[in-house]
Amino acid sequence: MSEAALNLSTEPSLASRKLFQYQKPKLKRFDGPHIIWFVLLFVSFFLGGVFGINLVPFGAYLSALGERDQTFLATILLLPSYWLVIFIHELGHILMAKGLGYKVNSLQAGPFILLFTPNGIKLGFNLSAPIFGGRAYFDYPFKQLEGFAKKHFLAVLAGPALTLFAGVIAFVVHHRLLGHHFDQNIFFISIESTRQLAQLSAAELYVHLVLTAIAFFAFILSLYFFVPFKGLEQGSFDSDSFVLLELLKGEQGIMRYKFLSLLQRQFYSHDLPRDWELAELEHLSKSLTRYHQLGYQQLHYAQASDREDQETMASTIADMLELAQGLPKTQWLMAHSYAMAYYAYHLKDREKARLHYDSVVAAEPRYEPMKLSSAYLAFVEEHYEEALDKFKALKVKSEAMPDSGIKVSSLRELDDLIAACAANMAGRKLAF
Image 1 (cartoon, rainbow, N blue to C red):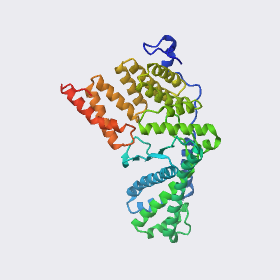
Image 2: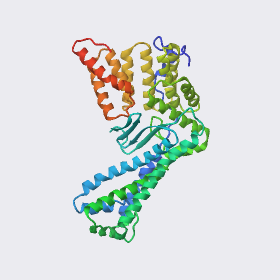
Image 3: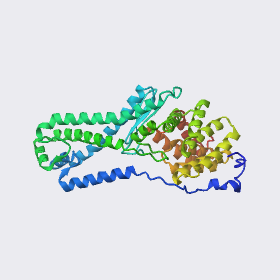
């Protein structure tokens, strides 16, 4: 769409108003594997109760510890055991990626985040992260595109492989330490055999509880990792097996993950894309979805804005509004608000831009850079109390969560911005 179709120097014409209204997409995709998996897991627990078998192997230890009034502490230990397995899985991705020459950025396991920086590793804690999920962030050295599919395949495969290996080790250690206490030492422990646990001390029970929990979670999650499902387009991630299948299919899948890797590189570098990177993103996005094309257009706008290229800024905003059509409502709201924030800023209407930035935050509360933009515009519009609250909240969040997506330079400026807000509220005019 050209600038003539959406004249950004004035309010939009009637002919282009359809771009500013949500249009329900024609097709909906059912993301079913998640639901199917949890239904099967629930049925397994039910059948276990019916037939008198502990399908959850550590159930035997919980029962034995319960007789000693230690059920609560024993149950609490299960969640860290689960997070440890998730950490091992993501570590497999990171170690292989590092060995293959990738740049590793961060590792998330439950609410814990490790951020890999030139100055070392930083530990963060983020309750807004998926508490039962994990993610390894790394990007490919894009000046060496040869061999991308093979190397990315190995980096993805390493996660489930290390998880399964850890499960085997935990099970073997458990078997060697405890094998003589049971007639049959397998995960499906009968109710009769659990009575022999009375021979063990509480400390021994805790050790074997954790070992069996690690082994169980590792084996079950290894199966889960190999259930192929595609993540929702608004930001959830594809399963490992889906990525592997896409890479094996051919060029389309390879292009998709090249694009995501390069986009992720931009997120962590916080620098404007270089011309060759933008050209690569444009080339890749043309064969992908609207959501991928929106990612390219956002970076294209950022570069045009930095160069004060008004014509490119206008056409990019128009393209973003057009691409937003046909997306499900949540994605549309975020993409549309993002474009409208640019649109208002282009018209030098900072108040409107700030409101649209807030709409993006409402659609995706974890998107910290947009919160920073909203706070800064509140400061420029002299809403100092609102800006002060937002800057303080961002400072607290960024200190607790190093993987917030906010530039390091912006973090250094937060203290100055907070001081400027306080000074202006006290009547001492202080610009920034």
